[in-house]
Each structure stands twice: as C-alpha cells, then as structure tokens.
Length: 72
Image (tube, rainbow, N blue to C red; front, side, top):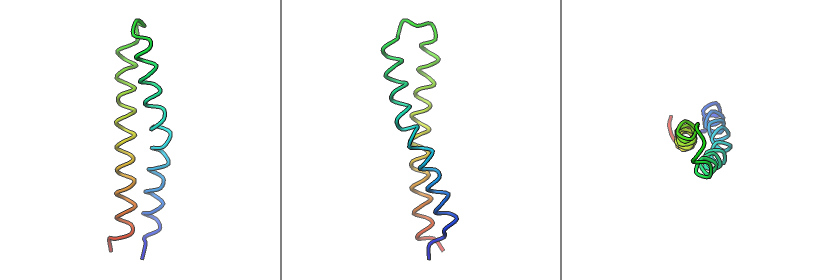
C-alpha cells in the first residue's frame, strides 16, 4: 500500500523544486552578464544557493515518494 500523506509530501517537495530549477540558472546567467554591477558577488551567491536548494528539494522529493511506496 502507498502511504498517501507521505506521497503528497513528496509531490509538494517536487512542486517547490520545479520553479527553482528554472529560476536558479536564470539568476546565474543574469549574474554572469552583469559582472560590473556592485551587487554581483551577493547575487552570484544567491543564484548558486537557489540552484543547490532546487537540487536538494528534487532529491528529497524523489526519496520521499519512493519511501511512501516501498516502506511499511
């Protein structure tokens, strides 16, 4: 049996990860185009953190979905 509450939790993680998977590279590309801007280092760090968080949420979502299907 699939634990539906845990499955919905995993889907919610993936739903939060999806926009971040698009926003992170867009921010990163924007940072590299504007290297002369005074806020460049801060925005670069923010863009990298968004990319890392998106990957983390993706892995956590998949892991939660798999555990909802196979754990007892």
